[in-house]
Length: 326
Image (cartoon, rainbow, N blue to C red; front, top):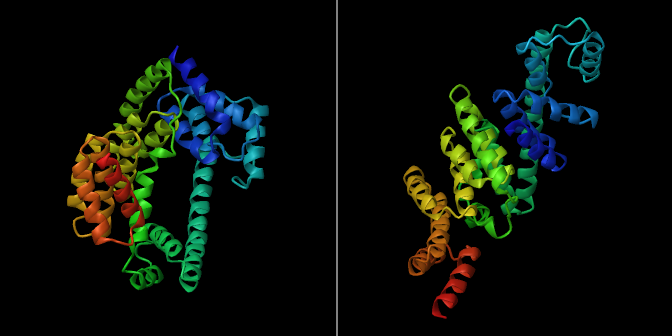
């Protein structure tokens, strides 16, 4: 039974799964109409007093299935939501509770966003004053992503227009994490279950295309990097998607697909020299793994010559040349 297999697989990894990473799984189960598995995990989180549970999805499930909630359970649910300051009175209907949860979440998100803005601005200024430029770059990248039109953010970004090689190094090393990242082992039965689930997920994308990113995260967490890549291909075009796909293709050793993806990225980021360095770095790694060592050395040599302060490229070039001579 696929539903039971799915439940067993999720139950096995659920204790180690971060609460923030559970939401994509809950969303998948909800849209895939895996009600039994959804309720099993929801009950498990409730019994363990998990701080983050998708009350809105749970209530939508109740509403859509026309489930009559026993009075004592209805009272308990409202008591929990009132304690969390989501609802103000016990007379809320299920629809009103769903709307209140969504509104509360939006308010919390906006508040968190403003707090994050102030935190990043302060951190970027402190890093600049202490000449911690590698840290400042990370803060600025996050600010640009969250607040691209903010005047203060634009001013700080203007002050740091000449981003140095550390930015390239961050992207390149992130793509080269395969030496430290080990996917969770997946047996043959689980592979079959994941393939079945991926087909269901793709059907869901017909009406909910915005879930492609969530599904990619979920399947990566389940240990199927290939399926995760498939869903990243289906995700709406974005800079974040571009780099995540480059990462996963390299980690999963899909070198030919990586080279095809790199060609597209070079056209897209043709006016961004630092992005091109990062793409070329990933290409060189792919060529080396494919056995085209001379081409890899030539490409890495170009990077090292144009960016002598890019230590990772220089060190790897030396290592490759020594290996190539043996």
